[in-house]
Length: 343
Image (tube, rainbow, N blue to C red; front, side):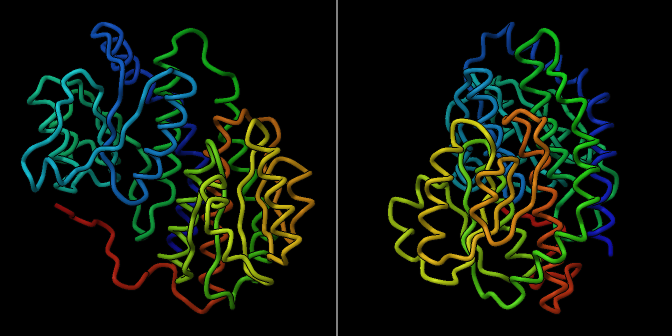
């Protein structure tokens, strides 16, 4: 039950970050403005890499900042990292101990770049080499699969965007803890939805825009916890070839938010339903949910850019209960350890 208990801590974790993360992120924003920093590089692996994908959309759409994902082996193995002196270089890692992520920040700092560590361990090697540290303050995360720390990383990215914009914060931020708590109350329905896929060997996970990170993280949780081969796609990329794999009965899981991506996704899901795909849709949009054989409603009062912070929680719960339905222990994923030390 460790993973399930940690999932339930997400509302309190985000509530804490809304207060604690603002001061260090204000220092980062002040330094970005002083230096005239015009782009961001993020080093991350695994779940944290999906939080970095979210940052690409948020910092790009709301702050006009190009965001690139680092190639850590250039610093850790090839000893020839790119020139990033004029960037904000961010290391995202729950443990803060992966040597390749540490190497990226160490290299960047030696070049004179502004460095930021977002980690659950403020005493970790990653934190030590950073100019500014934002602790996730999620408390111990004992389950192998990262859950509450991922939600925390997304919240920190959102708060970084707000700090860089300046002015009054988006009032929707204050609604996040209650929105997350509301998802927990839907758990009985999530259990039923997960049970429908208990015998599915594989599935496709779709999203677009801000929710693309959610699709990638949901697919990862399905693989590592439930043992289901889940392939995530941007809906746009899916139409450029993989859609040919769709056949009657194929489970297609989709995360859909109201906004510019909604019309295209509704059209695509309609095509997939007509081809016999078994659709499961997580969305705030009734029109998207109506196309599915199973669906879950997301809060309708959050802006699109904040929706992924809440949308991932039902996906995490789904993966947990799917593992149980398949007779797997979600606490002990095969071949995985809590901390992975890549170089």
